[in-house]
Length: 355
Image (cartoon, rainbow, N blue to C red; front, side):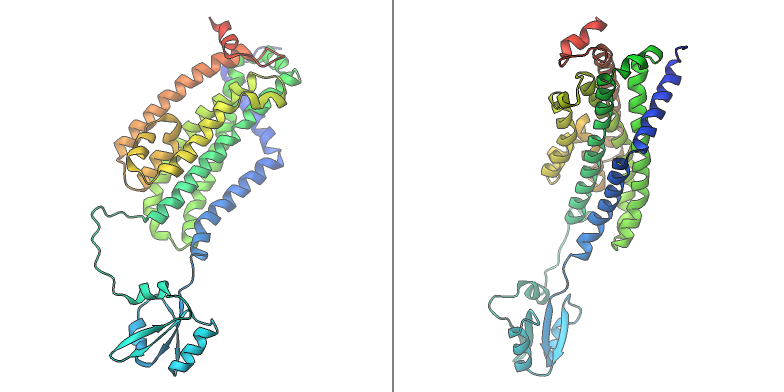
């Protein structure tokens, strides 16, 4: 059989990887779970954000609750209001007290009601932001989980590589397909699938925001989401090359755990790092220029309006250069270890053939 060119071989392998994944239930279940999770993270905080406190109001005290975020129930007497409080039908009762009002509660001060009644002082924001801390925290969770999910999805590359080595199919493949094309095809196929899923999520995100009544956030989310996609894709290529090497170093599925530790750190590090430090601008800024964490940290900074466009371009450039370097290293290690069977291949031994 004639040996295919590098580009032809790469695309053939990519097609094979995509068809294989498309045919698995796990792929579709995982993606459906991701879409549902996106809507849940966006909508549930609004749905379960808490109802307005229920209060009973007597007579002239109703003027004090006008325009307040309270669920008001007007009653005819103080006694009737007190009975409602004792029956736990309302959180508190607001009744006239001379020229003012008085709050009746059962056994503890109703702080949520008091906060509504107390006149709030004027607030001047020194660094006004279009997003609240709560909205930023939800965005951190969503970006982090999406990166984590797709990063872990790259494990399929390692598993398919080990399967091919274990069944000796790899020996047939490399007789017609260059080893580097085999690596490139695996990464390309999984990257195309990931890009397709990301596009679907990007289209679903505005719908989820509108359903949650947060349509005004679209103007802020859209630019951050636009940056998140290229950061995520480059980050996925970087992680995928590491997964491929992890799979090539072993010959049995049960041994894969011994080589995936570093990859797991590269996948989970960005998620937990941003979760812990997203409220620390200095640390988050550093993380946004570190290739392994930039994929989440920089879009979060852009969403919070803490970064300029030139910073995002610089960070993306650093990430792109890192991806090229990691791909070259991974290609050498993959080539040197793919056809070696038996015990786990040491990195030094995998590197040796290229010397």
